[in-house]
Image 1 (cartoon, rainbow, N blue to C red):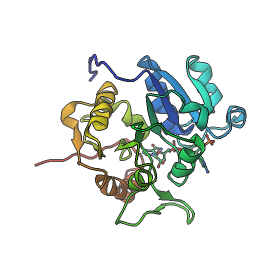
Image 2 (image 1 turned 90 degrees about the vertical axis):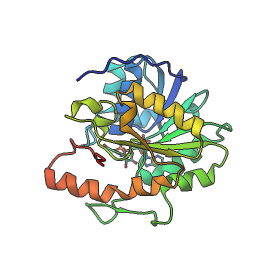
Image 3 (image 1 turned 60 degrees about the vertical axis):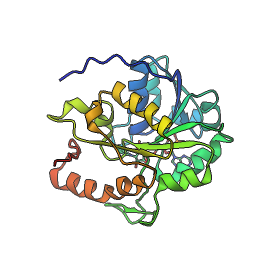
Length: 237
Ligand SMILES: NC(=O)c1ccc[n+]([C@@H]2O[C@H](COP(=O)([O-])OP(=O)(O)OC[C@H]3O[C@@H](n4cnc5c(N)ncnc54)[C@H](OP(=O)(O)O)[C@@H]3O)[C@@H](O)[C@H]2O)c1
């Protein structure tokens, strides 16, 4: 099913922090939707020199840029300059350091956080490095109280984030955050990705990120059991 939705988005320039499969998938979709998109990395020349895929669906970043000539690449610090929206799609362990590398963030900056606090130090499946009394999103928000963290899209495989109608039913897309206006901006963005309003479940403030992140061990187990990540959660009454 293809949705034909025209949505006026409040964003023009979007900084996508992360050159992995998630950053690439989101950046590509945003370019196709007509946004000015800059993908952020630690070291531009090192990222462009990579020739290997990441094994998770991410191609060498130079291939992505070649196929999408309007897409730019910059360091995290350059990337955030003038961005109406930052999308945080780096490794969970690197979420705080990527923001540190970005430098000062303007008050009210909206950051869509897609990260998961996965710890692969003991192999696969990973554990979570945050205790159940908090979440990575809340830790980021506590460190940067002047910005608006909105959590969404972290509970599904990256291909579904921007193309939910490829499943028989799109299932649920959770969202949470402390600032309602920021959340509304992100809901509009999600709708432009193909999410219907009825599929977007608002879990309230950022405490909701605990459950969203803690669902990952179950997601990974289902992934192992099915042998693929082409599924989503559904809430029924
Ligand atoms: N894969 C999925 O389908 C999926 C689904 C839902 C949520 N997520 C979450 O989305 C996030 C991105 O996942 P991914 O698989 O696309 O990529 P990833 O391999 O988890 O992360 C790659 C990115 O992290 C950055 N990074 C790594 N170490 C860093 C450090 N020490 N300081 C600063 N940046 C660092 C890399 O920077 P460079 O560019 O400089 O190398 C790169 O941009 C993760 O948090 C993941 O849990 C993934």
